[in-house]
Image (spheres, rainbow, N blue to C red):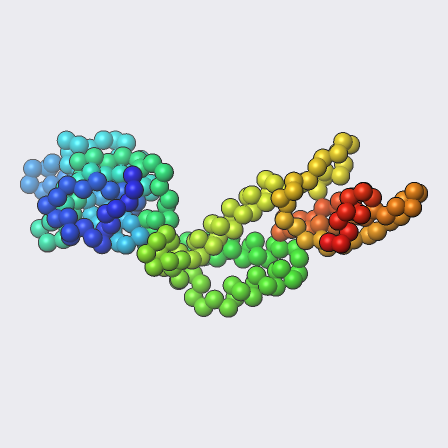
Length: 245
C-alpha cells in the first residue's frame, strides 16, 4: 500500500474513513472506567509525526500485540477524543507489505544515533588504502551535526538523523555487495583457473613485471578494494594487450 496519508495531515480527513500505513510504536490493552469495556490504546508513527488510535473490544485480536514495532496497514475512522485531539478508530489493522522502515522513523534515540555512528566509522576506519581512508574520513568529519541532519526534506529519510541512517544503510549494502562479488583471497590456492568478473572495481596497489623463458613479459598484480587485497597473474598475451593501463 502506497503511503498517501500522513500523521501531520490527518485533520484534513476528519470524520472520514482512511486507509494508510504507520509504524506501530505502542499497543496497550486497557478498559473503560464506566462499563469496563476493553480496547487497545495504540500509538502510531510516520516520518511526519505521531497519532493515537483505538481498537475496540469487538475488533481486538491477540495477534495485534505481536505487530508492535512493525509497519501496519490500517483502515480507520478519523475522530476526536474528549480533549479535542485527533484519534483513529481502527476497524482493521494488519502487517503492511513492502514498506521501508525509514519512511516511518521520526528522529533517532540517543542509542540509535550512537549505533549508526558506530557502524559508519567502523567501516570508514576499516578501509585498507590509506588515501581512500583519509579522503572518506575527512568528508564525514567536516559535516557538522551529521547525526541530526535529514537526508531529504520531503522524500525518504526526511527525519532528524536520516542522513546518518541512509549513509550507514547504503554503506552496509555496498559492503554486502562487495563481499558477494569480490573474489576470495584464497582463489589463488584453487588448482583450476577461476576468472575474475569484468565488473570488479579495484585499485592496483603493486605491479611486478617478469620476463618468461620465451622472452615475453607478464605481470603479477596486487589488487585492493575496501574489503581486502588479492594477487593476480597477468599472462603475456593479456599483459601485452592491457599494459598501457
